[in-house]
Image (tube, rainbow, N blue to C red; front, side):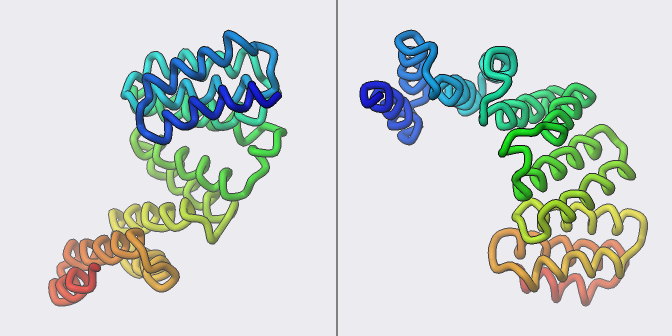
Length: 219
C-alpha cells in the first residue's frame, strides 16, 4: 500500500510543478504496476487532466472515457463526465456536452450529491445553452445553479449571467438586483466583474452618469 501511494504521489508532485508530461508518465507507470488498485481511477483521472493542461483535448477525452467505461462506480466518475462536458462544449458538440452534464445530475455517487458541485454543473449547463443560442434554457439552468447552492462561487457566476440575460431584454431593475447581490456579498474578482457589468447595463440603457459611477467603482 505504501509503495502504491508513493508512486501515485510522484505523479502528483510533477502535476503540482506543471510538469504534465512527467506527471502522465508517472500515473501511467502506476497503472501498469497496480492496475487493480483502488487508487487506479484517480491516476486515470489525473492523466486526463494533465492532457487538458497540455491543451491535448483529444487525448484527454480518451483518458476520461476510460473512467466511464472501466470505473463506472468510482468517485471520480462525475469529475470525468464534467471534463468531458467541458471538452465537448468547446468543440461545439452541445448535445453531447449536455448529455455528460446531465449524467452527473442523475448520478448516485457522493460527488453527484455535493451541492456546490451540482451548482457548478448547472452553471456549465447554462453556459452550454448560451453558446448554443438558447437563452431561456440557459436562464433556467442558471436559476438551478442558485437553487443547488446559493452561496457557492458558481451561483454568483450564475447571477452575473442571469443579469446579462435580463439586460438584453431591457429588464434593467432585475439585472441590477442580481448584480448588486454579487457586489454586496463578495469582495473578489466576481464582485469587480459584477460592478463592471452593472456599468455596462447602465451604459446600454443610456444612463451614462450611472455607468461612469459604476465603472469607477471597479477594483
